Amino acid sequence: MGDQVYKLKDGEEVPVEPADSLVATGWLQGTWVRYASGAPTFSPGVIGVVERSDGEGVMCGFLIRGPQHVTPMQRLSDMWDADILQRPGGDSVSDWTAHDPGGPLHFDNEKQLQRLGSRVVTMYVPPTGYFRWYTFETEDLAERTTPGTGAPLVYVPNDKLYVSDQGLLTNEQEGVAHAWTGYVVARATSDQEGSFLVVTAAVG
Image (tube, rainbow, N blue to C red; front, side, top):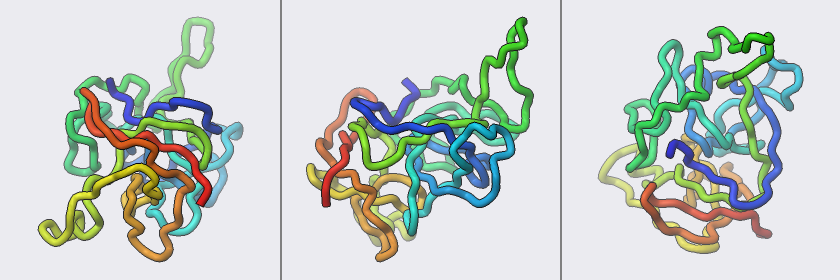
């Protein structure tokens, strides 16, 4: 199973166009984004262009699907990689929805568009919906920055969830400019796919 964020109930979703590091290095499902300057270059029908959030300032939502691609070679959907943090226990099923954003579009014999690949992706707008979330920070900022100086993160119900400097959910407020997402942990547990959080909107 290549999915890392599952919608359990509701959730407001809109189409957006990825830019900058999202296009250059790919992204994990559940990566938080903010609006980028400039107009969409591929689809005028999307809400806007987005780039990876570092947890500070405005966050407009999170991407519900991959792909984790890199130009010109497509990455496997859910494997460990030196450049992108990925969850342990992920499978090696290739994400066939991925394709190089500079590559050709895919049309059928009737000239109907079959696949957009990573040019247009789905963003969920917080704070709505219930989600099962496998991609989140497992170590605090100090440990990620200098191994041996920090600690593992432990998630419990009612923890407020923030966005890390890598664009992933965390229960650590890494700086005063890191705003609460509007989501909290409803449940923290694991299954055959790994550790996950059930995340839902809450009132602060």
